[in-house]
Length: 165
Image (cartoon, rainbow, N blue to C red):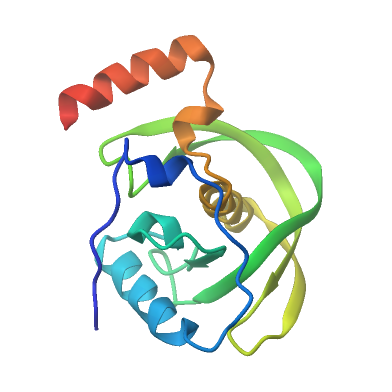
């Protein structure tokens, strides 16, 4: 087991767009470390830039806190379509400890990703799994929950966060 340090805001890596993964050869150790770090935190998702690796990969397990573990790896993920409207949900982030904000996101997405074996998948995600995947995909695009707020709300939440750290 290798738990890695989590990068926290305002580290500039959290605002960078990650590079696509072209070679899956050495990804297994990174993914194992990401799961170890995520479960230890304890979180339900973790994107590579949150541990300082600027590649388009994240791990998530949206059910483990309320049921069985259902971990999966998303390499070069993308939202293929969304539907079902949007909903506001409270989100927290391992890279912005102590902050929870309401974020509006689509409630139903068709999601594409590659697994560790190089197999491309398309799946429909709903509810919390859809929210979690979108949150982690945001990290790969250099977007954090602060970026999903109005300017006024962002200024207030960032000021409160500055007091926490």
